[in-house]
Image (cartoon, rainbow, N blue to C red; front, side, top):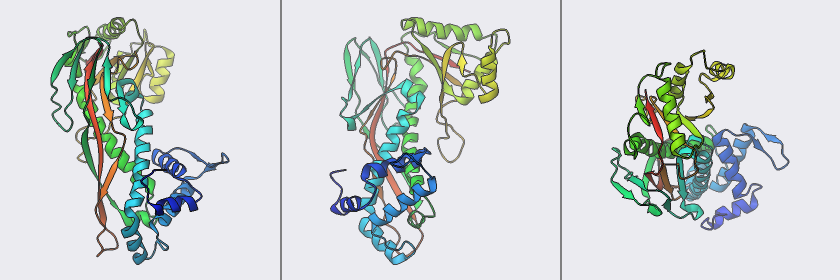
Length: 370
């Protein structure tokens, strides 16, 4: 249990059938849409799990009757900060699990989480070009310096904030589930870090030690360009000790590989994959990794990652992960006070987290832009 919890929170946990770790796990599973099981291994319905979270929140907030405005106002005034501490812990857990389960993130990003006592410096085992993304710079301007073999580089975390709005009364009265708010807060942060990572990726190919069409090429994917695309895959593998290579891009980008699908070479398995999921699951034995894209804001005009870009990445452990992320692993939520004049109001929450993003080009990779 967190040492900085108040005696009130600790007493609630002591008197409640659900401890801190279990409550965090339940809220995390709800936020991520996972199945939930009780201590006996029986499946717990989403409705029952959400009711457990609601009952616990009311007990922690000291609200005896969530239909009584006076009880709600007093409970929120006295204990809202303590309840948000529990939510902060859950958000931390959702972010940690969400990033770990993201296949493209694991293949592309080396992350140091200071909350788990990692060193914040990254060891570079080859002559490398370093491009450190300045945190908070929307233009992603990269100062360059060359690192020699056997050097280390440190990233300095910067404070990032995102705003989330919610009608808090709907959560207290059970009209909305707390897990939905947790998920909204966690997704808001992960969208923020993805924007920085994708911004770093966008210019990374321009920093490759070896330029030219043998590693970076542009054009419509078709049977006529298949040999050039295949050459990049081969060159990336050969440049990194004949290693495994993955092809990475958004679903829309990966679907363009279908245009290489001349019936003379595409396998029946690949044809079935196109039929079932809209794209090939493998390209000539090379694993395809989908980057889950999303719109950058509510205008729904710009996506966070370009649908015309395919990355050809060597699978050689952390050395091949050219995006470096330092994350302090701790979320803080600052929320406005409720409007005492209204029974329903929109609460503004500012979610704060410290992290930094950098690019270290230590090994050759490839890129194809359509």
